[in-house]
Image 1: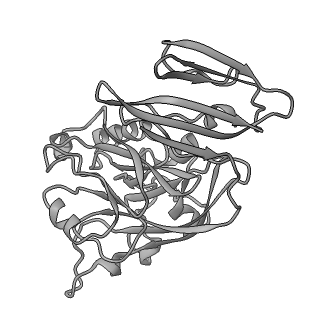
Image 2 (image 1 turned 120 degrees about the vertical axis):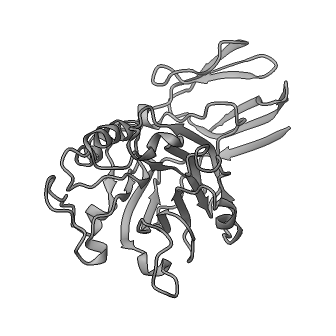
Length: 343
């Protein structure tokens, strides 16, 4: 049995910096806190052999089997999910391997969790490729990876992507002062290196519990060339140094439970305007905890088994600590115990 107690205390309001890199890979010099790699196929073992990150996603297979997407991180993660695109365009071989995106939930500090997406969309520039990329990006939210898209390319999906997802393109914000390149204009490939538009992008999105601040966006081309001046990839490596800060009033605890469960937090549903008052909590259970809810503001999470135990918080009463104990049942991890301590 494993038990974890999480006191509900605010995190100090300070800024911290993290370095992220997106690269269509063949090698990984220099230190970065989080690296998303694309086309990590048959050279995966060599790539990981020289890498020192403590947390790395396992390969999904070589070309034709895997997506080629992996994340290497100095921070621990949970909930690795690999999602294949619903659509692909056979032109250029995009349907020969299961392209898509990955997502991991990364703990970058106590109380600070970030969902990190990595993607590799349909390549090419004909009408079928562009139409497929529009559908690819429609499956996404915040992301970091190879979009194979340019703002200057007419009919590509990028201009609507930030507004539809609430994300910020770090190259547009930091290098171009927030001004998007015009759709249909000449491709920005002859400008100074960092001013060039590349098809790899980094997007960010803050939340009520966690705020990003852009410190620097760079093209790391000269950090990756060999002694002859040649790069190991046909894509540029792009880097962002991000400052971030957690909320003084909201804190995300570690997620208890097993890998077969579905993690949840209700911040997107509950905190669209202000922080709501918690007035009641319902826990269902018998031999194990089956569900928890706090009506009427949030849905129930879990099943319908056991008995429902509901209690109402008095005026001024609040939860100050949660304790959960997990163990094995039928060879899967279950929550056997949940307690809530109030003031």
